[in-house]
Image 1 (tube, helix red, strand yellow):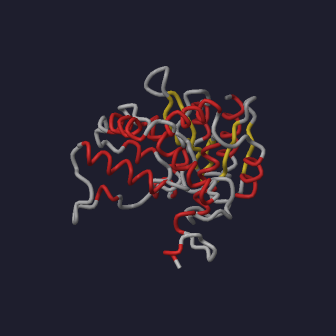
Image 2 (cartoon, rainbow, N blue to C red; image 1 turned 45 degrees about the horizontal axis):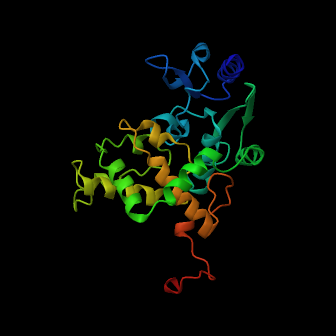
Length: 268
């Protein structure tokens, strides 16, 4: 933590960046919240521990944050992958953001461009943990009726607060389908059908793009396992299209890319 605070202070003192986006203590001992340090003395408020789960890359596209000037962001591996996915989707230009990757021993690695991010991520483990793979296998191995009952029970608890959308770094549309009322694509109030429509549509929009940061599930006040749905679709997108988002700026979005040798005849 001390090395992170020193690095942030040095960057701000040298005017190498205008703001350092990191974590600070939250409203209680179990929570951390974002910190936007704009002055060197604010760097002392930075923390980095198990509480620091939110994907801070979601703030990099905010106009009010971009207006501050070049930002440094305290980056978990998922945050680094998000930045590369932003590059793929033409949302960030190279060297616009300085990523501060925190190692297991607390060491800080400055990653100033996309090539450095790719090189750093190439050295880290990929894929799901054993526990996560077992969880997905248990879900996909259910009989269809049992699986439907599971998702029905999960999604009927949705209160349509859209915390998942706010926390997700890849839900950055300036006008979401939920905001459209002419025509009214989705019911405004929480209802079993409307909840299903919202969560399935959002999951489809993330298929082949989700970098599995888990911020959606962390933000959900009802504890709905939205991350499970995203992971199932991510596995399918990788198996069918080789989609592995967030590791290279040269990856294309599987669901918007046409290839002449596509096996589906209807697309020709």
